[in-house]
Amino acid sequence: MKKKIVLPTDFSKNSWAAIIYASELYKNEEVDFYILNAFQANAYTIDTLIVPEPGQPLYEKAKEKSYLGLEKLLVKLKVHGENDKHNYYTVSSYNTPLEAVKYFIEEKDIEMVIVSNKGATDDVDTILGSNTIEMMEKVRNCPVLMIPSDVSFKEPNEIVFPTSFRTHYKRRELQYLYEITKITNAPVRILHIAKEEELSEDQKEKKILLEECLDGLTYTFHYLEDSDVNKALNLFVQSRESEMITFINKKHTFFDSVFTKPMVKNLGYNATVPVLALHDLRN
Image 1 (cartoon, rainbow, N blue to C red):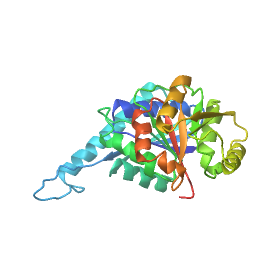
Image 2: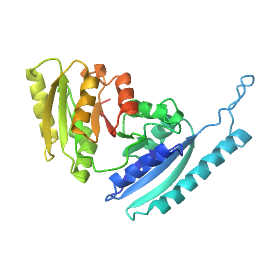
Image 3: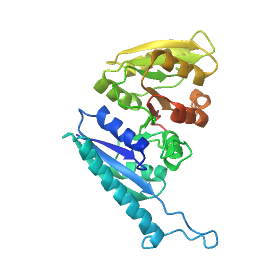
Image 4: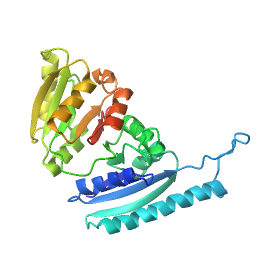
């Protein structure tokens, strides 16, 4: 059964790099890729506050630009090299990137979103850049793989998985981590960062549960004593030259104090490696 992956684009070199990363990551898998461009026509006047609608010049101009951009991308993909296992479809949506992605996930039963962390100006505050951070946080029923703008594809040497050992893990939550490790042969490095030296009895039980969920994968446990989780995670990744980070963005747990929006924003904007945001399926 073919996978379904959506690739948001603003036609920038950064979003193109994310598309190529996705095609290389899944080069041996059968995938239907949906290249999604969300367009808007917001040049309405303050006096009238009239949002352009279908048939009006501003709307039609924005729509045409979107369609032409998607057609050029398909041509560019053919020039880059075709893969018999991959199909590419284009989608033009009059919406914000975040809302367009959320709607399309439901409509097509999408399994993953792969997107650049920056838009046309290398700025997190561009339309695509800022929405990537929102996607990592708010797309709750589909994993989001964020690709830094300056990263070219190579098989990840390892995937760093920070954890508090304070929440229940479910196999289905880790499905896509499991999948990526299988297709890339990358081991998982489970990283616990905390002030305390020893795990509590409850944490030890959660650790055992996590081991059960990762059965069949190659993984190791690592521990760092530090009160600054963000700094410690970055140092760990840099020192080992790790090539991917993943985390489960759980709600109402210990990680609310770790992967809060500022932390997600830091990962999304400042990460030098791809970041896979998984989600607690009970939310």
